Length: 397
Ligand code: ADP
Ligand code: MG
Figure (cartoon, rainbow, N blue to C red):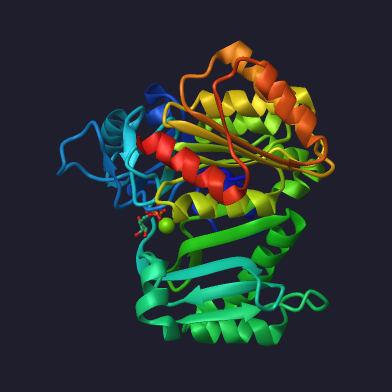
């Protein structure tokens, strides 16, 4: 689960990290009183969406030369003017995709005098199996480009869970970020604080880009992107309250109600599969035959008819879906349950696109029988290869 920048900053502030003062704004009428709470005279108005690249992003509704999703304002009037221009409009950034995201919240923040912009994140380093700091002096811009073009400018520092962030770790991070004087002292306090917040709150990513050195020599967290490990959310009621469903895919929200592992994708072939491995294989084979999956969907091992029905409805409700592939290997999951779910769902919502069903395993004959006895217009397939080819051809034809 992701949260907004202003929420992440409030959380980091509780841990003692240096963040600027700021006030979230939900209505344009709140802009002036919010800004008056800040010292001024330099303010920054920041779009709050669950996507990065806001500074360089463009509002769809505004002229191409209008300013982006993070704007400096030098007076209260400019704050109000920018809030009016930004709130409710659609921000398109590198990370939102072409459809962009509607900006429903803004964050008005105290403007900082920036000397240098650095990059810092904490994430799971799969090669060492540890949480690791990733830092670079090349902050503020596209870290992916830095990783590709000048990887020597990035330091990955795995942290020993038994010791936490040691003094030696702090020194290495300070050195990599070329921190000295006050900034170095700040760093030595900040790194353990960030690590503590990351581990205590079960984050899966804490990204500060940029972490800045200000002209007064001190450090400040200027941007904050935080993702939480969904499997640990049950023990963080305070974090759950920060969830902003308007930022999430509606189909994914619906799927989470039924405990379905569902991820929306860009293609046109809807998939209903049991088992994450088989789901991955199904997506691969669809691609192999030249089409793109519309989703990843694992109905799981012990799915009920109700759950299968919900899954099928979610797939058919997606207007991008031009064909559906049901690929089930019945083990714990029984083929007849899948068949019942598919039939029940089609009865409820109808079927306007081709449907290929491949069933194998426990109760396969019963499952096939159920589908044959229904008058569903199903294309039967014998194996994974056959199924993928049939659905790709059906959609293309
Ligand atoms: P994004 O990464 O989504 O573009 P950031 O929060 O990183 O958004 O802001 C983009 C840029 O705007 C930063 O790299 C920084 O140069 C500038 N900026 C952001 N917040 C402030 C602030 N409070 N004071 C001064 N400049 C800021
Ligand atoms: Mg940023």
